[in-house]
Amino acid sequence: MITRDLAPLATELARQYPVLTLTGPRQSGKTTLCRSLFPDKPYVTLEDPDTRRFAEEDPRGFLKGIEGGAIIDEIQRAPQLPSYLQALVDANPIPGRFILTGSQQFELMSQVSQSLAGRTAVLRLLPFSLAEVARLHPVPSLTQTMLTGFYPRIHDRGLDPSQALGDYFTTYVERDLRQLTAVHDLQRFGRFVRLCAGRIGQLVNLTSLGNDAGVSHATARAWLDLLQTSYIVHVLPPWFTNTSKRLVKSPKLYFHDVGLACWLLGLRNAEQVGRDPLFGSLFENLVVIEALKTRFNQGESAEMYFFRDATGNEVDLLIPSGRKFRAVEIKAGATVNADYFRGLRGFAAAFPDALEGGSVVYGGDTDQARSDWPVIGWQRLQHPPVR
Figure 1 (cartoon, rainbow, N blue to C red):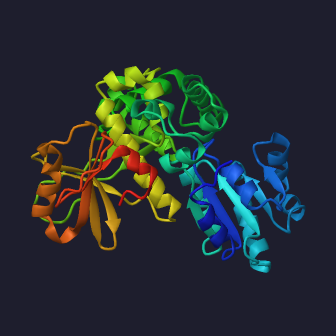
Figure 2 (cartoon, one colour):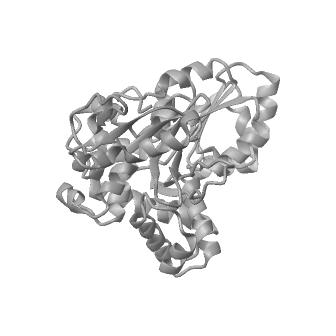
């Protein structure tokens, strides 16, 4: 097992708070990380039907058996449990007493925020970063990296990514979403998710998504919220000011794992990825989510933006740095040309006080120390952060 980038921060916060809450997608490595960092704590999972029934029917009795502390996996399966945990940790607030994990961020966060506010630190663990993959084995070509994605089990066990990602999606739909009343038609929902993959890196248009999937605007919104809740998609908001400039105000759509997006698009080998019309968007997805992983691994929020005005001037990624931003332009091409810098120059001219610096991340291998905007080859993302 490799050391996860989040491990030092998780250990530090467990020394400060009575509860540590770790959220993230299924199979992102939450349980493995918690059990390795806290090997002396009892481990219970609410995925087990008998354990879950015990926690739901007799929460006090359930907690009495682990009142000294424990790792409680998939806490969202017993929504009332954080309320009972509150009384326990208030009576004995020793640091690191309970470690909670969950794979549904908004549902879990509402429970935690209501019951454990001020008592828990909250961290988010996404699948492997490029840096973490590089610790396990040499990083393959760009197209193979995108095809494989970053779920730990694929890398740990050397699984075929197409088979593993297909199983992942099937399990996610059949086990998780079948239990949620928001999804009644799983076949239509599967089509909706594939349509989202086809719009990767584009502005979210719920009317178009709903029409193409054969569902209402309201259903499309509910399903997109569900995909966000379950850490399948990430919606990147636009940055805009209160000036009179006409700026785009719709968010852009990405997947937390680019490999899953490739699988949903029907891509089954690296050559297909390189030829696909969405290759540039998939590369953009990879870079945006790498930046998000860096923020999460540093204990920061998901606060990142893109910029686009009504005339098409655009910067792909704005990462907060104090009260300003570092701008990142993302280009999949392996040859640098002048157009790569146009968005950065336009943003710097329009908002000089908002910019601390910036760079271009591209699909080539060689860094270039340009005077205004350094150019970074994609493999340098193995050495975070993208800042």
